[in-house]
Amino acid sequence: FFVFYLSFVFPVMKYPFYREDISYGLYIYHFPVIQIIVQLGFFHQQPFEALFWSLFIITFLAICSWKLIEKPVLYNGGRIRKTIG
Image (cartoon, rainbow, N blue to C red):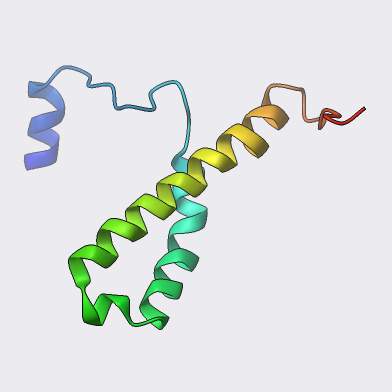
């Protein structure tokens, strides 16, 4: 109910990447990154620092994925452009 209420009370808010669609990258990269950080034991030693670094790494990978892979393929009709030569 609270989320439903907030969606009608607040106007549409634009987040920092409103022109970029990094949601799929966040979805794809969150599980492997979190599992690697858990396996390395960082969440047991320093949970808040591990949370910060996992969010940073996941967001970085999602932005790189959008800029280097997803956006060029989507806006080039599904064809990958030649960048060399």
